[in-house]
Image (tube, rainbow, N blue to C red; front, side):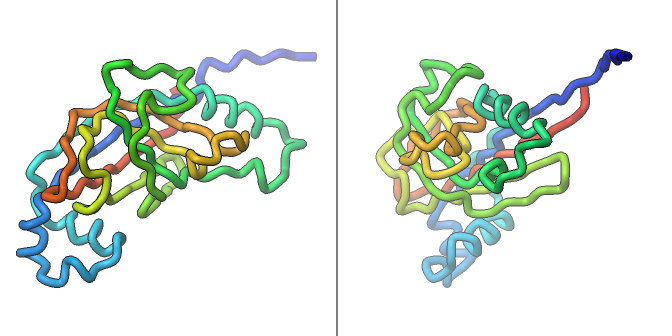
Length: 188
């Protein structure tokens, strides 16, 4: 049997792009703002200059790495093997740090289904719009993507995909926040 050595491997890079908008500015630009759906609000906010704009990098978790390994087995063809990134969680304890072994946020304070996805083969973009009426009263500084509702984390198919800290945002009813999380998969 001939053994081949491969020198390349899969690399995963994650980028969190956070955009904070003034709710009053969005209402001025879009008088019908309060009647728009979340998807429409997310799209409309893209056309307005944010008051704060941050780029941060994240850590992918062992759960995501194990998922890749499990799905290299050609005998695994069940639909359960196909997971999707469908929920976002926010927390307020970046000081505790992040590691690849994380299975939850340090102090999760808010969860929501992801507003929009885009996939071009080697890159997954998950966008979530947090309205001025949501996640208020917390100083948000950590984020994670989940394969399902984090409330169902006892289900082995629901796991944390990535965990990141970001520049803190004191969330109140004067702000909307859009989180664009991009996971890029490349040969390295």
